[in-house]
Image 1 (spheres, rainbow over the protein chains, first blue to last red):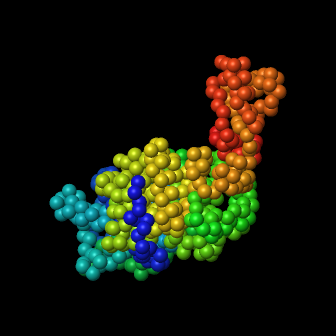
Image 2 (image 1 turned 30 degrees about the vertical axis):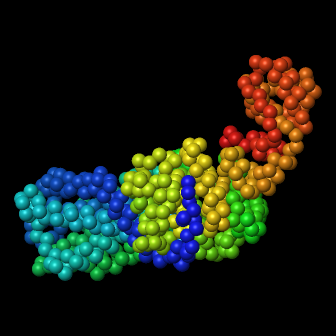
Image 3 (image 1 turned 180 degrees about the vertical axis):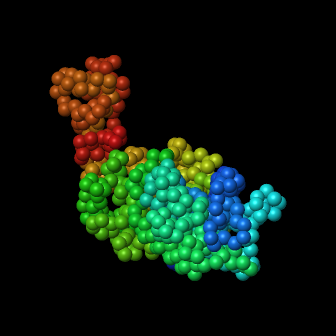
Length: 299
Length: 310
């Protein structure tokens, strides 16, 4: 091989200067998007399944559903379930995005980033932003599909009416929910060695967390379950999205079973801050030796 | 080659739970030279490599590399090093060009500078024609070339390579080492290689033999080989122990056995070789005569062979 020209190049590249973290963050975020586009099955998995849940559960449970006290007008189960499904989509996409940390580690890509000058917080933010944007994109697609189906008579009519300003607020709020969930996924994925292990955690922790968030059934105001729902940070994500969807002309009334928008926002931002801090903290821990060995054995 | 020290390793120990992977390792790595850490799998070289690449924290001891204390200045140090791992650190779902672009961004390169350097490196590693192909479609050898191009994007002063010949055919290995030698000669890059392959170790300027987490010998390959004078007869046999006893009985020379390999070392082995071939024909698979190898040095220092110990 003739390398003379390159190796005689006079000026060292500008990388001798401390590289700006934003460039590394941007590149990791962009990578998440490109990888997602190249894995179409992920899109189907994260969007098609929740849409099916919405249609099938909505139709199946409609007869036995009793609308909560705070519901405005005639609320069908599908309408009640609608924000919950949006959160499920945010969760699925966020979690699938975080799982790729395990894959990155096994394939060696992560080690390449870890020995680069990008600070650990930059790695975390890049990864989380990528997952967040993907989750937000899919949730928005679902919201549009849902309303289109209701408009076409393929689903019961919904009285959601966020208005322009609150639609923008809804985007912000969903971004915060997605960011916190991606962070939660990151913390777990960093600690786990296998995708199988992650699926187990998903089944015993994340899905139940979603089920008791007011997404699937309305929270009561008393009893053990009411407390579990109150202590679940995702409850405030679901409730916040629900409130913002109805915050136009006919906002949902304040009720003990449905937290106020201010509380939802505060709890969600706190949840996002906690998972971000947790993610940065775990990312400073050594990548498990078992995983490094797995990467070598892959050869 | 200058005699400046690029890396000073002082009393480095590293434990995984109870097990010591490195035990008070001391070593100096010369600037602008190719230094090899040779040892069996599990000998500690990958742990040492991980510490030098700043992937593992220092548990005990000190490392000063390129003038930086690795405990306190890892981020600045990382700007100046290029690392290739045993498994290529490439995103297999992205194209070759995309992988290089991401790498450049991580090191603060962008725009025209990044495009030009990527193009030059891909041409020089003869992968420019595959730059729009997804990495997953490349052979192991091509992936390794892309990996090297990627690591050189930011013109590192220190290049760390863990088992660089992994997955490469003999031609690609030759190309790789030619490239490393040119890097050393033209840019004065300090290169550190962790390997368990004798042929790679022979191409290093300086070697440290690692076993059981300790450096058991160090020096240039020729100086290390010079520790064992004379010649060596190597015999591979199906029934090595039986053959060893019979040879010892018949010739009164000391025969050492490691696995299925028998070795005899003495000043002049030619006559003995002739006798063995005529007396024990059919009882061995192969018999060969040669000067001492690094394997012999390793065997002499540790009592076991370099290969197949794990």
